[in-house]
Amino acid sequence: MASNFKKGNLASTAQRKRMNPKPELTEEQKQEIREAFDLFDADGTGTIDVKELKVAMRALGFEPKKEEIKRMINEIDKEGTGKMNFSDFLTVMTQKMSEKDTKEEILKAFKLFDDDKTGKISFKNLKRVAKELGENLTDEELQEMIDEARLSGSRL
Image 1: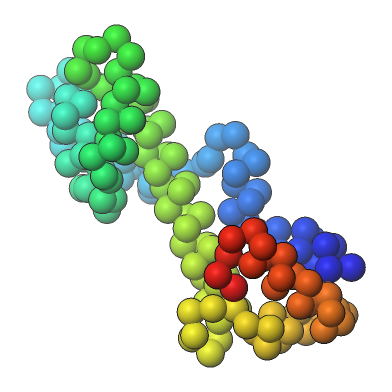
Image 2: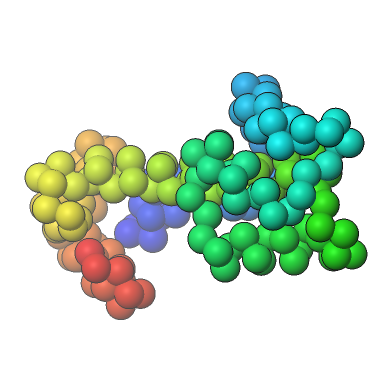
């Protein structure tokens, strides 16, 4: 019964997004990305310098690390032109926004569990959420879930 609880009701939007091969953005998000791209495409060629990727991402609210930027540039600029078109930039930013949404969803779900704000999900927290979801789980099943999370490396 515990596994049904985990798979059924705890399957989050984040998990479904990971299964969806191409994340979708709203028109507003696409417009923001277009505006950031156009800001750095000063000469109107339809490309930006890959060196400006970090600054363009910062303009959209991201703080990419050097290694991450290098990896992205290597994936995008396979020919070594030093340029990136809007399609490539949109692909990169769609992925980044999807990751950001996923992280935010996970944090939001965690906060729902951690109502006593300890930074951990306790047995009591898990029991409360199971009850709120209408799940009829025994204390043993709940403890099993906590034990399984601990075994998998979580700090639950």
